[in-house]
Length: 333
Image 1 (cartoon, rainbow, N blue to C red):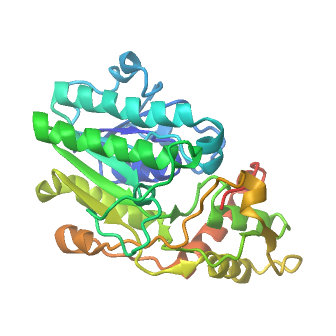
Image 2: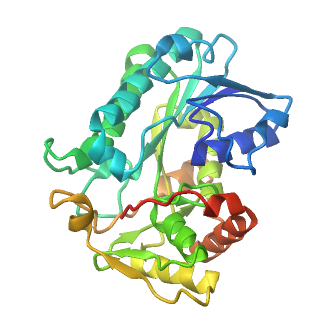
């Protein structure tokens, strides 16, 4: 049994990771702003190996109460995400994602804790040459465009992670998630928002042409890759793309959600102009595709859930959790 900490453990991916860690017998401390009391499918408090420590990762004194001697691994997932946050509060995005990561790294070095850092496909920006291998170039827009604050903050956090490994021999691993979806995800992302709207009797939103492509990765597969990375000594000092390599257009993903949900009153999507929604300076990414062969080769990771099965599972979960359908939905391309 390992003693682990999960920052952001009440978030979407974090909560699934906590469930998996508890299921395998680990002692788990979650460090997060607050408990998720709305989601009735989360019942960590009933588990004898679970502990919750409230706090903000930018507050190192609060973080010190969770990252202590005796912790084996910290999974650092706490971050500010979501397009609206990037546009409206980029300073908060940068502070949490950079300063928070620096605090986690400093305390981990002090106590000899292994770090698994959750990064994002956003670090590749608008690189026009997918699929992206781990060390491919980052291509970003102007620093005056707030849309790039998230990508930059996560890349800066990765630089900190690898600098601590090089300079101080801190054992670190980076996992880069590609468009993860599934149960519990806030209804502001493509698949979760589409499902939420359809099940509430509203047409899903299709941004611009819908020809943008993504490689949608079911949350259970993302968790499996994260755990494999945390268990491998060969993964120390490395980054891994964790993502499906099946390219799917946003239009096709929305159509699949419509088909599987099969709600009589909703048969088509509603077109939305991204520039009108987020301003002319917003830049969407036309194609985002990982090369995940490194994770397959070195970690033995394999995608288990295709997009059709993943959407079906997510719809089934949403229908079984009526509180979720009452959550406010946002707009995000």
